[in-house]
Image (cartoon, rainbow, N blue to C red; front, side, top):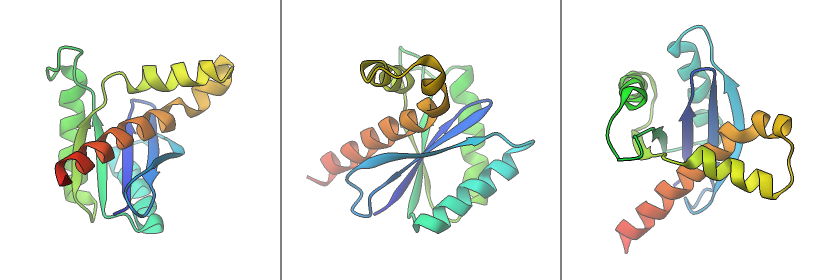
Length: 141
């Protein structure tokens, strides 16, 4: 089952996709936020259609303690909107430390700060989506 991973940010949205077997997540694209969520969700729907995805997984920015803070409340509100506007099921998954993990891997690959800023959101989306895919596999076993 192909899935689309979404890392919501205030200025950019990182997008990742899984392979058709739902095993491996790969970074895809970074979308600049539009003037409203409806525009953003339309772009996500276009990706869903293009890749024939069966679900969307949105990163949930919980606090380090695992609580729902202001960022997670905003994400929950947007997930509700996405559930109404997208044609596939929308799930959420813990995204704590995904951006940190993405940045560390790029630093290890000797990417400079400017290059990292251009791709960090889609890599964070892939890290989050991979965590969800791995979690789903554990549930199947």
